[in-house]
Image (cartoon, rainbow, N blue to C red; front, side, top):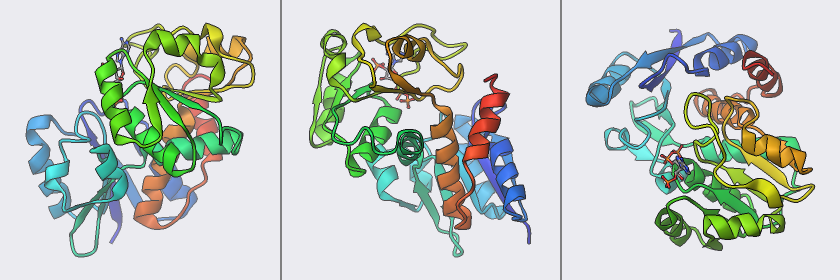
Length: 275
Ligand code: ATR
């Protein structure tokens, strides 16, 4: 029987995941399809039961269900437990629903695809202390990066995150701005700079030094103001397209045990977004 996969979220219309996974199924000659499903928060439990009962083999989870879905799953892997959030569900042969989170590892793969291990043994600054910051910092640390410093508009949240992650510390936004030149890798994980949301920058990149890698997880726009200002100061930059593609590739691997080609997908999405 043809297998099928899905992504659930609210809103869901804008998701680029269906196009990406369907292209990979084609490319890998796998007889499967992937559909977007609009699920509101009040219907999440029924949606999970429905997906399972209708034979869905796995699905992605996006805003606002990444944490709310946890009580409806049977197992979580270490990544989902660390992040307290799930972006991938795999339905095992006996119907067990296993949640995982590929966002953090997707970021690390994207970083290493672009810059190899250039940022290893350098100090890392993570801007933001939400779900994305948590996933990325745990994945960076388990891949051997660090020490990791956090800065965030709401400092208490950064302190909480640093409490959960060994070999990490917190800086106020103004102290982070003053010490930017000390970092070999700066990762912007907030929503500041996103199109249709809140343009602007989470902090002033005036002190970024030449050769520093500055990554932003936003991919729309392809180059946030934070990235373009950092690039003008000689930084090497990385936008969020690679992380998006790699988190999808890791989900695809979980479901199919096939590692899809990511390079052409990054080019394709970059072109779609106007690059
Ligand atoms: P995600 O799962 O995408 O990380 P989140 O958990 O809601 O989303 O976290 C959003 C992050 O963006 C937080 O670090 C948030 O800062 P606060 O903890 O102070 O709320 C940050 N953020 C959102 N809007 C911001 C703004 N206008 N200025 C600075 N930081 C902002």
